[in-house]
Image 1 (cartoon, rainbow, N blue to C red):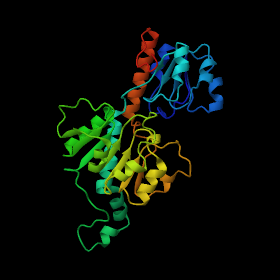
Image 2: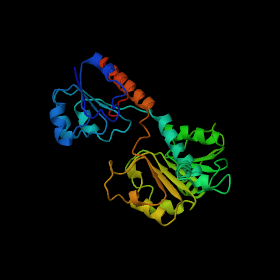
Image 3: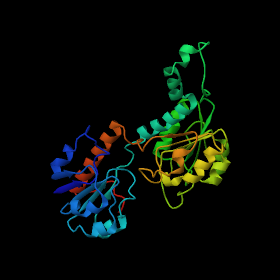
Image 4: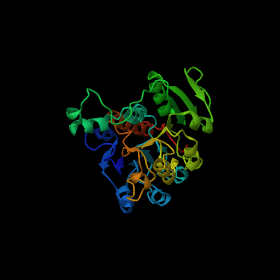
Length: 319
């Protein structure tokens, strides 16, 4: 069996190993694959693994030997799943491998905004503490999280894990989701509508999937309903946020701050309005990328391939 990894560098830049896949056949790993090279590199493969390299209908139909597609991620919008289904090719993703890591990043953003650790570090390194007349000084407000409200737009695995952390800090948790069911045993928790969430939350965490219904959900109207002291955090998908609207809200002081791990186009274009916005924190789509999470990603990918070889594919998104 020939197994081709089209863009393995992000998941494994060299600190992990693909050897677990070798027991199933020949493994060819490319760090990245440009669109014009996908068809050539995929020729003869029975299994294709892709993270963000697009597999469209034309590509899939042009690979007669292809039997399985593995997505090195949870999201699978880069694969034409209908075209794969018509060919009887299962598309298998890797769900819930980075839950703890993304929840950790969300709280990294919250704690940075609450305590401004980086700004104070820079101040001390500039000599401000050495020159200070007092034993203590602040260059930015210090905020206690206990008693504050965090609101989640979408309440899947990541949001629920983050809510557990918030509860440990003594925060109140509110959430909105499509179904708004369950969670009866969660303390200090309430389901609310979107308007209520915006009005009450000191921190709004966007954790919903990208769908036609959620694209642009966080727009001018949504942001206008938020508290002027509130912070918006997006670790879901970039297009859920209308980026021009968010930049305007930050620059006009409609909300206090924002933090994003994802953008509508990645890498971003130089003219993305958020790159020049006030009071915004960035990470370059690294919420999923701890070594521990990536190790789980590779392990589940191996398990997906083993299940396929045994004739019982798992984590299939196009049954």
